[in-house]
Structures are given as C-alpha cells and as structure tokens.
Length: 222
Image (cartoon, rainbow, N blue to C red; front, side, top):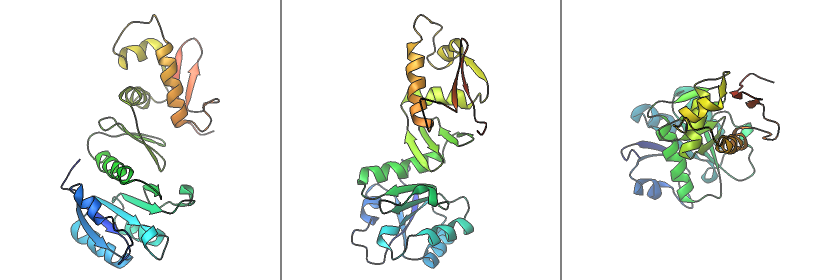
C-alpha cells in the first residue's frame, strides 16, 4: 500500500460515523469535503489519487458530485458508497460501487485495489482490466482479487484475444511445464474463470472450448 496516497473523502459535515479516522489510521492523507463545490476545489488544488464519495452520509445520492468530479478530472478514480439496493448498472460516474453495510476491511481492500490498479502494467481488453502484479481484475464496475494461478491464466488469454490456445501452450505458459499427462488442472481452472467472467458459465460466450484443440477468449459482441 502506498501510505502517502492522498484520498479526497466527500461525506456529510456531521456524519454519524466518519471514515476519516479509519483511512488516516491506514496511513492515507485525507482531504475532506461535504459538497460538490468543496470537492472540486480540493481535487483541483491537491490532485488526490482517489475520491471516496460517501453518499450514505449526505442528503443526496452522490451522483451529481461524482458527475462533477468526473467532468472536471476525468482520470480521477471514484469510489461511491451507497445504500443497499442501488443497482450498479444505473451508475456511470463512479469506477467502483461499495454497498452498505460493509466492513472496514472490505473498504480498505477496495481502496488498495483501486490505487494498486494505477501502478504497474495493466492489461485491458474489452470489458476486462487486469493488473497482473496486484492480481486485481475489474469487469465493468465489479472488481475481484484473483488467486495467482487464476490471474496468470487470465493474463495469458488477455494477451492472446481471439487466438486458439492449445492445452500444451497453456501448460507451458501458465503452469511452466511440458507435462500433459493430466489436463484436469486446466479444465478446473477454466471452469473457475468462467464462473468469474461469464454471465452464464454453463453456456460460455467469452471463454470458449475449441474441441480437440484448446480454448479461445472471444470478446466479439453477441
């Protein structure tokens, strides 16, 4: 974690439970704002690494604040905290949606993932953005932290979109072996990836099996 990262926190002037102590306790420098005007002023003056908009402490859903920040600073990552029940599909101005209730650990994980996604090489193909170093995957507005092997397997597919990758190729480039005596390991990990990236894992649209050859990551619509 970058303990010098500056976070802009937008929350009510008198929140029932401020997030400032928790974030500062993790080593972040926190800038406070309680409305859109203050948020824009702080963001333009100090250039934070992340904006956290806690709409549950405001007398608003926070969407206008997110829109204003996005309009003024297009590259600023925004984490929007909302009440349970708000569909993430209806929010286009925030990068990550966090629904209450949540634990502080989950908040810290989301913040660390967003900040780490801006460091190191990122592989972005279609809906998928993967940071191989942090193993952080974003699909649209949903984010996941992958195991090392899942991250390595997905990275190989993302670096070869549309190509048919043989089982031999996957064993050599993911598992670092030429041994093909048992390919069930590949099949199991393919199933796990499908459960993660497919809308209907039983009928995969993206990660397709090419019978007798291997697998292909298809990102074409439809």
